[in-house]
Length: 338
Ligand code: NAD
Ligand code: LMR
Image (cartoon, rainbow, N blue to C red; front, side):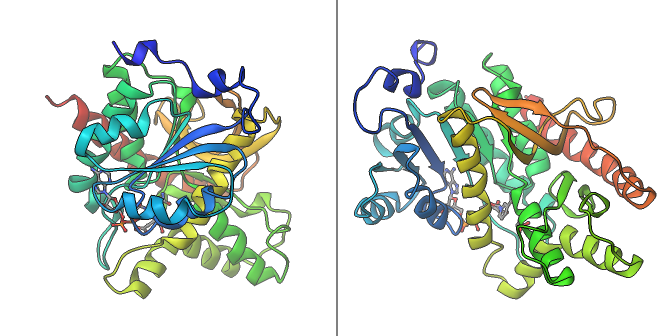
């Protein structure tokens, strides 16, 4: 089979003497969209990417031509489904970022996107399993609590699943938490480093404000927790039917991808990002859970425990688990139904 003959492009380039020898091929699937375009723009600035491969069902030739004029050293290619475009986009990839799928409109939950996005993610995952089975897969498409299990099941069926290389991107929750707390406490965002665990939807988003080092009143804790859990709705409402967070998501997606590149390509140690991964933390109840995760050359290096929390936060976790359990089961059942 084609996939089994593939050698990681980083490994191949390790023997090269070119200036960009130590750099990765990164694909963005859904690259023409609201997230895909600014995310690709941010990734074009990375010195750790040698080839930025853009795939979408429409418009990637134009997006790629535009980005390719930026004078950073990476090559940019655009692919659409014609002429084996998905294969061209994925072969040799080290990292694949997936923002493909429809966004919410006011009044919808992320789970309401399942019917459309589950099959988009399943089919893209299937192509990844065939053409770049060793790539790290970063899932942005909602509902993340279900789309990550979908990718896992597709990879399992293809016999190429590696739990250490599959990530649900929950970075936007951490970015928001940092910003919102910095506003309330009148500190810089660097000082407001907030751990957010759980999943990526409403009550499954669990900020651990008690671990931040700041003192909050009870009202502040309630208001901040609600705002972090429902920050996505704030943007969906403000965009008034034209979509959900795109620019802040591109920022968050680039932050996570760059952190992974530092760990995978540069071999930097001690890089920690929150992310929704297959996790032992609540394994009796849920297979996937986001906590801080140390990244390494093979993806997940070390999954951090939840740490010390208070009673309020324990209540948030207790509320998150049943919903997460349902979301995960729904994703798995979708792949295994046939
Ligand atoms: P968008 O509609 O602007 O862009 C989606 C893109 O996906 C489009 O260009 C579309 O052509 C493409 N696409 C659709 N089907 C495809 C397929 N089969 N193959 C390749 N590309 C395909 O939407 P957006 O605002 O960019 O949001 C994308 C997804 O990201 C949504 O599901 C949204 O809910 C999710 N999202 C997640 C987070 C997060 O924190 N994880 C944050 C914001 C948005
Ligand atoms: C977000 O948190 O902004 C995203 O998940 C998009 C959404 O639907 O809210």
